[in-house]
Amino acid sequence: ATAAQTAAATAVTRAPAPRPAARATPAQLDTTTPEQRAAAAQAPAAAETRLGTTIGSLGNPSEGGFWIRTPLVQTRAPGRIVNPATGKSAQVELIPLTSGGTGSQVSLPALQLLGVPLTDLPTLEVYRL
Image 1 (tube, helix red, strand yellow):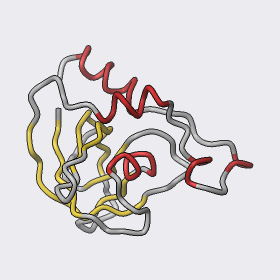
Image 2 (cartoon, rainbow, N blue to C red):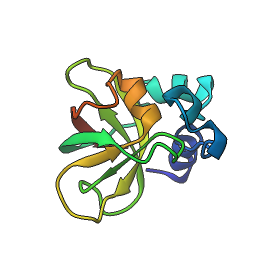
Image 3 (cartoon, rainbow, N blue to C red):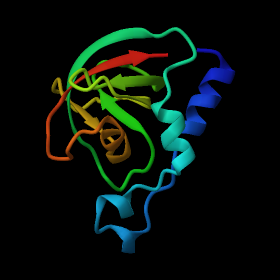
């Protein structure tokens, strides 16, 4: 990915952490803006590489933004995840998961964008931009 593509992806995927007093409902924990959600739902403008599939679970809901911690990457990079059951996708920041295992942790806003109930363990396709 070029520097411009990485900067554009970062503007979409990053969001501040929720306020500690707001940690009660998924809506209060999601600090992404409507504009970020719309941008994250768009199809990628650049070519991408399929990295594989993973089982996703809800990651730390107090970490804002669109991201996935996955053993499928070794370095941070812009990417996209797809829920093959619905065809919905989300642009995310790919973050290495170094604690072992084959599953991945997904941010609350990304799971919501994919239409996945927060307690499900969906199979997700992972792509690097």
